Each structure stands twice: as structure tokens, then as C-alpha cells.
Length: 109
View (cartoon, helix red, strand yellow):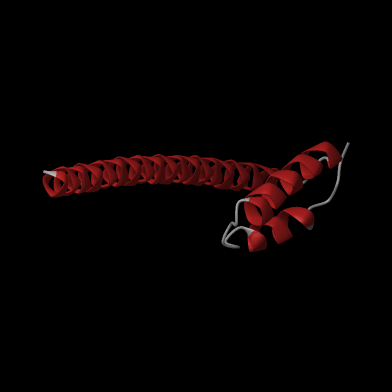
């Protein structure tokens, strides 16, 4: 009888350990999925902001180049936008030549 209780107890103990292990593994997997989703969401926001800045910088640059001059305030704004796009968001450098042309414009008040 003692052997039977020991065998049953061992089986129950093994089952409990297995269930607890599966629960912990499932919980950890859910945590990683949530972290992956948050990382993907943040990357999507960065991509969206990057495209918006790219479009805005290009639009403003064309406006200033067509006009033939730039104000100091406008230059400060567009340079800061380009810095954020290029440095902080990892822009690809497509706007560098456009920015060189904008910075070469004469300044007017």
C-alpha cells in the first residue's frame, strides 16, 4: 500500500510540475508577443513620422527654392526638421542635396 501511495504521489507531483511549467511558458510567450507588438507599433510610428517629415521638408524646400530666398526663421525650422529626420529618425540622406540648395539661398527678413 505504501508503494502504491508513493507511485500515485509521484505521478501527481510530476503532473503538477508539468502543468505549472506549461503555465509559466505560456505566460512568458504572451509577454514576448506583447513586447513584439509594442516594438512593431513604435517602429510604425517612427516610419510614419519619418515620411511626414520627409514630405514636409521637401515641400518647404521647393517653396523656398521657387521663391528664391529664405528667412532666418524659416531656415532654422527647416534645418531642425531635417536634423530630426536625418539624425534622430535615421533618414537616408535623400534630402541632403535639397538642404544644401536651401542653405545656399539668400537670406531676407
